[in-house]
Image (cartoon, rainbow, N blue to C red; front, side, top):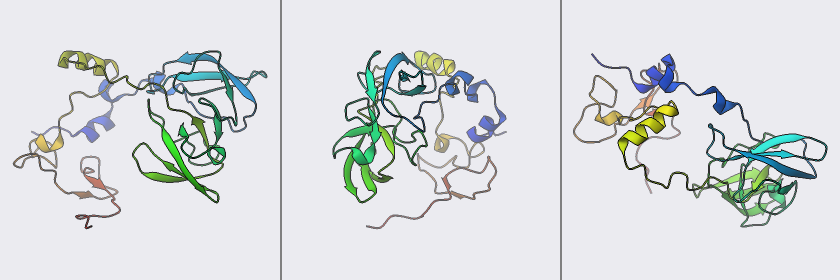
Length: 232
């Protein structure tokens, strides 16, 4: 008898697939209206993020939490509209070549892009009301000049550099985080256990799943923009 595939088991719930409640208590981002200077009053590690979280407060007592830039320290002053690492500014006001992270997709949405430890995007050029930004994937993306971002490179780089060495250590790390590990590749399974199972060697099968397919069948390419071999 075959076993349920990962999508089905995740939908059923359980300790292995449950996200810890503490991971969602901290929601870093920008306030809709910010001005002046904020002071870093606390740096904390969030279980739901790979970047340390900085708690910021101004003289009026207004508080918000944002991702920490590299080398940020408690007591540092963060300027809204500044141009130094850690400051928050509109990307239209920054020069070409400046590194930024936690970039807003739309103005006042709080930040959506480049939010992982050690990452940074680079401002390339400005054309009218559009700013071209080179993402960590080396692809360019266009943003409105009013979108805000944090200057500098995100903190938390190098946390995965230290080798784990033993499978047993990795097992307990993942168990404490309620993560599924080890995760078997679908093409290495038997045909009864997964739609990609069986076959000689690791050869990924091309499968276009329907958008309304059930969780047991929704594997492979989901509503792709194009199919077939890309011709140059």
